[in-house]
Image (cartoon, rainbow, N blue to C red; front, side):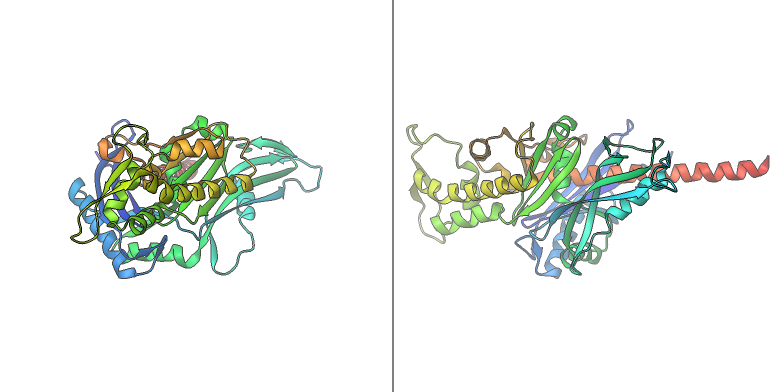
Length: 407
């Protein structure tokens, strides 16, 4: 029996770099084989600012994953994100017949061609398309078609969503991985990856927004009728909350991170809950801080983040079409009290996204902070399956040709 192929996801983030090694099990479902994580260095606000440090972080995460899995890693599917990412919708049409009224059957080549035409948008030289997804096909103005192959019509159209990014920033992510001695098979937008692991097909169909709260920035994707309809980057991330607390309370970053997670999880009216013990910088003794002081620091940032989400939902035109509400993922989404505040501000149901879709994850990976890395592995597995299917189809056609010549 041949050795099962390996899928490795790599998530380069502002605060941590993760590598997840997976293989398909006997039933074809993806299973975790190993996991490695390292502290990210060389990043600032979602962008690489020191290539050598970023490369070292990749090496450490990959080495930890190799040791955990016992599998050598030489290629990965890598996530990317940052404030430079944006989304756009595009459309294109293709006449099928020799005249405007003549019809014929839609072929696979027609679908491929009209999809390529839709990606031919004019972009500044520093921008590039890093992902394109079909939303729906139209055949002679009949919309909502998901697979037009085999249908008859005179004109085929397609609506497409494009994810755009800074060409340099995207290339720097690939370069950092390459310099660590690893080949990048493909890249995936981090919010799309988080959606892969956190959203159900029913939510995508009904209408849902996913907010991936990262360290240096956050990202948003909206789905409706099974397809992505809107994507955007938000300038705020979890580090902004942590830094606000560190400065406002004069406490070390690790302590500020701990306090951030606890905010909103206690009832200040309960006895003993009105004050919080906070460590001081250096050798100074710890202090007791009134709980209301935390609200003064954290709540304005939380409101700012949710207002940015609300603004993007308005731009998407889907704010009243999200029957499944909003799902929050990423390490920053674990901010205590965020879900309740989101429901109040956005007037939509909100939940914390827990990653799934991969077997043998263990307790550590069942955390919103790892939604992206799990989704990257799922995305890579899907691409690998599509590639294998195309290769099998090609071999079948070649065997058919040779078989035909032998008759």
